[in-house]
Image (cartoon, rainbow, N blue to C red; front, side, top):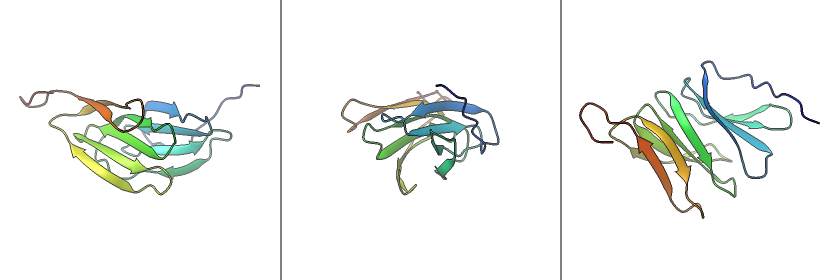
Length: 121
């Protein structure tokens, strides 16, 4: 039976919501700068990933649910340890990052950024 999930925690509009492969976790990002992970069975907030300084436009989860990649308006892509919330890497870009996605096998990811102040995307 389907039932709605009400996620209480973001303070600004959502920009992306994704389940992990197993479907037990739900990840969201929004204009409030804080990607969040939730239990999908009850909508309880499990944790947040603090470090972006602007809207987080997109996120993706590795197939084994170990790593999260996020991209945002602060012109950066960040990789996180899902379990601990630790930021593992930061990749600066020349413009706002609109999309990130892990490649098959989870060893690479692609990011898409907007041109900004004359810099190419």
